[in-house]
Image (cartoon, rainbow, N blue to C red):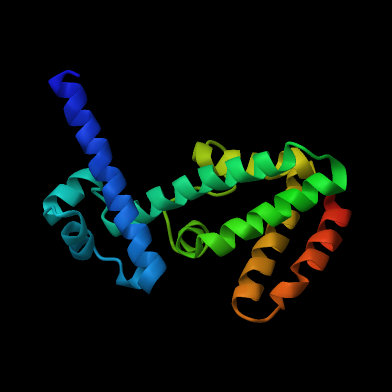
Length: 183
């Protein structure tokens, strides 16, 4: 490996360490407790090194975490839908989406509840956003129906987490939702 390749590899590894530390801290204590000082200490580098990777600081780090989350969510939804059609595919995508939200609360929060500099619902937006949307649309159909399906999933996730819906009734909600939106 050449010196330049090694430097790029170390830089990429450091970037991933910063993102991993941010996710870990956010999972444990919430995004309010994620600071550049804490992250620099967690990875063993100074704050200027951290800003060298993320000049926008915490907001840029949250955006990177969110974009990785959208990539993961898209992969999970596509995988869930790959072996089914119609109502079963919609139900599999819905279950996969909700399982992702449950398993990764800090990432989900960065994706949908934190103020990040992403261009949702705009032409030419970040490819990760469009790909995640398309993973749902591939199963649901047109953009408007996909937006309503997505909104329902997001609402279910938030309401379950807040104790406003019983988690044990999730399967019934998924069945109802998928029967209304399957193509």
